[in-house]
Image (cartoon, rainbow, N blue to C red; front, side):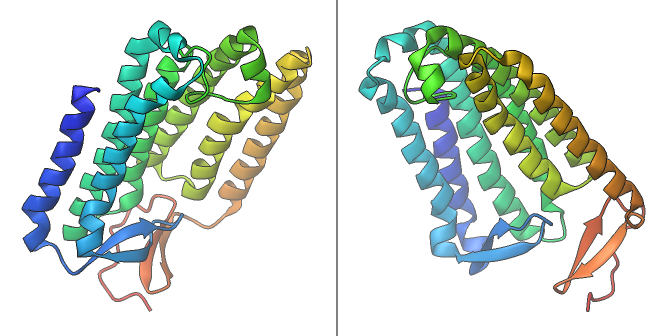
Length: 259
């Protein structure tokens, strides 16, 4: 089992134990696409939720290769798989520490912090995605990749670029605050579904048709950019009793109550 992931989980539990007496009774655990808190959880559950979930995930990392019919393939990308485990576990630890920090500092915007962690995770996974060999637990597991090793390898090289590009856009959103919902769903679509489309077209021997997919994506980007350009100026907007950023206002958040 990866010793670094075990240390990360231990740090998550340790931070919960250390901060438990100082934490309020209710802890924010979920934010909507606008960065507003929309769900709280009792402290007794919240502080252990992510550490326990991450611990179970680390255990699954260990057992997944043992249960995989293609377990011999893991030897071919063992180093890369170890790094990806650290990256995923590190992201979960980052979210846990971020939640604890925001609990004490509710005035801090959550979105930039989330996008930094998510963007870094996308880029890390993208850098090692092409090294993954055919298996049943990790990677783009669709019928066309599982039925052909050549399809698997080419699809994962393509997926590497998708993840890295998605990560760059996500990191950029953390600093420019363009349109969070668009970046969230756009990055997921790019990283998760575009490789599936590529794999299918590769299977059908029609990879050239990807140019129409690219044109469609470009068209969507242009439309969204036009909509964003014609929308109101960057400002603070009052929604559901909370001040929410629209774009990236140059002025600080208003101090008066939002009504």
